[in-house]
Image 1 (tube, helix red, strand yellow):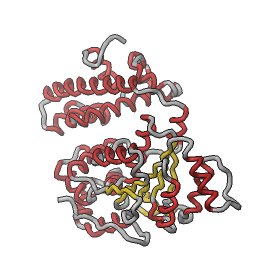
Image 2 (cartoon, helix red, strand yellow; image 1 turned 120 degrees about the vertical axis):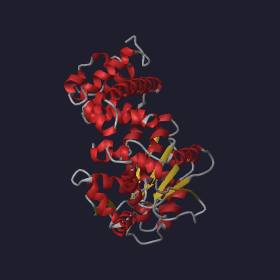
Image 3 (cartoon, helix red, strand yellow; image 1 turned 90 degrees about the horizontal axis):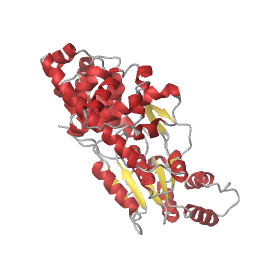
Length: 406
């Protein structure tokens, strides 16, 4: 393909792909798109029936990238092609003349073409994952996010701690439930595995509760003990069973096995461990050179061996961006078309909690925005109770919630 992302030919191609957004068979037949090297890498492993959806996913990623720099342009394209609105409908909703819609659509298409071309170039520049990296990433839980908001500084700091040699062996991500500790840990580990800083990732969860369908659900799992942790690590490292081994011998074998590759270990939801102090002390003995991330609602900063990063709820701008992003992912027009004042009310009543925002967005499929907002406005105490149930009904010291977003 001889054109570039700066040329009209490529912009026209992207326009054609958007027009076929909901017709995956037609989308799969846009042959010039498949000639892009970066797209070939994404689509190589897909069966023929999934090529069209694969192209659709690339268009979605391009729109998300465009939204970072030109949110109004991305919004216009989503209205026109993802939501399949007519020019007249977009003109009415945005209070534009139809001619203005056409002009801004052309500008937005150019921006999307640049974004997709740049993404393809980055994909070509990124080295392919080797078998070791693929195995490390396979050990991680599925991501619960497509994009993180409001944590760029924390992400950079966390990665700095993890890359640092001779220090910061145990790093604790602390904050209330639903604030994004697990998502941040997973994103950081994936990035560091991809760049080659670690060749092995191990993930142990102590979670006993999760929030789904508006209620707290219970996992059929006993509370994590240090012995349970060692058993899981033995299994993951292929060391067999713990039966009959002295504790010191167990730890010696674990340390030796962990040291064979640059390893990062995540212990998720530490607050549900049976004895947090014993688990932290044991992890400190297993560390060096292994790096350990803990996610917890407890404060473990009292332990001198732990480096702490605190996560807070999203600020106003990040909360609004996340609401719009998640509404686009879930295809909730009521929120995508909502006024800034209404979105601000959603941000306010959810206290900037990503999980609480997801729950509110989920309600919009069955209930009008006005009804949900009215209920929320008259039941802030109830919303606090919901948020509190997310953060926890486990014993121990908990976090004090900040005031609602103002």
